[in-house]
Length: 251
Image (cartoon, rainbow, N blue to C red; front, side, top):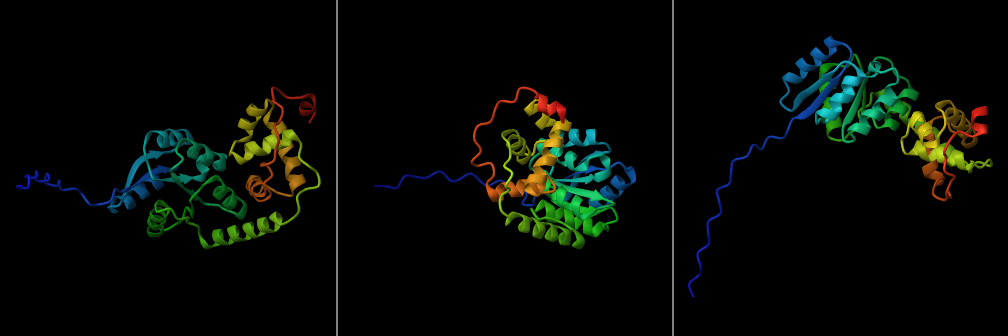
């Protein structure tokens, strides 16, 4: 039997094999810094600025409106940059945030990383290093200066020591466990207060008691402690919080 003729495959369309450029959002209160970065980026084929912002409100609008890979975020653009980072990542979870700051310490470094920041650079960084940072972060790496690396190592050494300590003798109350659960979900004090039905000040009071009981100093250490000791796995059902109790308002 004669073999039936087969239709020839359609000709392949020529496609551009070049990778898509890394999309940047610049959030900085100083126009001169934004202009400088744009000039540096303009000569790089693999980078493209898709939006700019000079206030936190504009930044939140930009990350919601423009698909981007990396956000260069000036810490001074917000009075509370750590919480601003959390809000940004809530709106754009896949965005990689690089904090640009002029002053930094160990506590702030660890706090930023705990909030999901992928890079921290000094405002005086050279153009070459800034471009290298953006590329590395876009590829999924963490970018820190040498002292930042040392701070993180020391912080995790301290946390490792804390984790090996026995569980606290003073057990947490149901309400404290509920608040801890909210913290580990990344909720802010204001959001926890709304969830529990009380005020932000009451939540702060509870967290201070929890920190004292567990021997931790901040939200990151609290989250790590919960993971290591499986603090929330055996938590039973808690009461439905419908409003602040008399004990709450007395604190």
